[in-house]
Image (cartoon, rainbow, N blue to C red; front, side, top):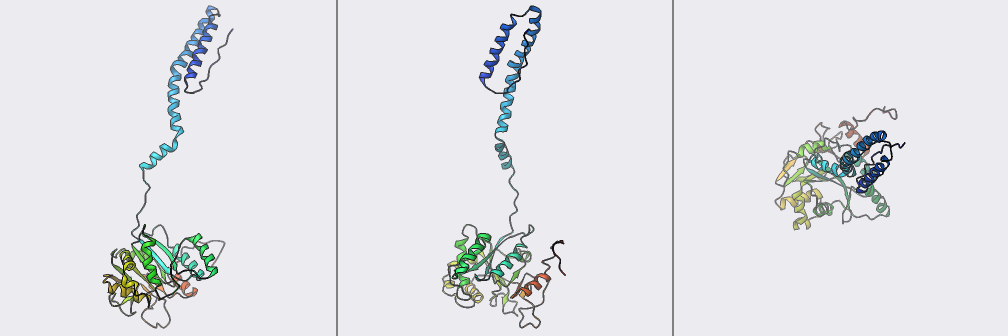
Length: 342
């Protein structure tokens, strides 16, 4: 007696597979002719069922498998199509601000502190893009060439200008005049020139600048200290701001280029006045001020105030600590068994 075993479909969509099935049926038919009539009737029904499976079900199954295989073979294509249908959600910043801290190559500790206090302010609820960069002239010491290179590799936040280190002999002019070339592909809305002993509260600065015009803006703490008139003289070098169009103008101004030696903040004010620029001027008093001292020597200093934008003359770590404590900078410190503060 011959036993017909069930054949498990291989699901391979190939014409050779169909020929194989037909050959198998022919062999079975020849064997069937050798069986008794009664037995052959039962076997014939089995063969008919097998023929139906091979010739009717398999082709459809092959078609189905080919469709499934096509889907499985390129999931990235389908995913890519789906991704392109939904663009990533991005929030455009209110504006872009470059905060350039003019400092010296040797002041590693100060840069570390400034990186720390500004990075802690770069929170998701900050509505503007603020890039902090440390600015100094060409390196002359062997140790700085190595150690500053390490900083750049780690933080990438240093601009080295083509000048000899100085305070009032053209460094500020070189800073402003270099920026349009350095950031020609991604200009900022505003540029700050800041000392390395001033602390800006970025949320307060952004809140203030959101009310300011984007062009022809000259913003800062007006000098003299007892004046409230932003058009009277110039903005203190502790930290003042120019809109990008004024930065571009400085870079092309022959007057600015030929008048670089002198108190840098006074020279900047003189450039703008001579060029009839900076028609939008804003005095930040009393939100910007010098660190409080027991007996104020001038009107540039006063007690801490809640709406502080910036505090200047933070010459040592104790002044930094007292300023940051008043402004509640460490209030986000989480309790831990690894430390305690008495």
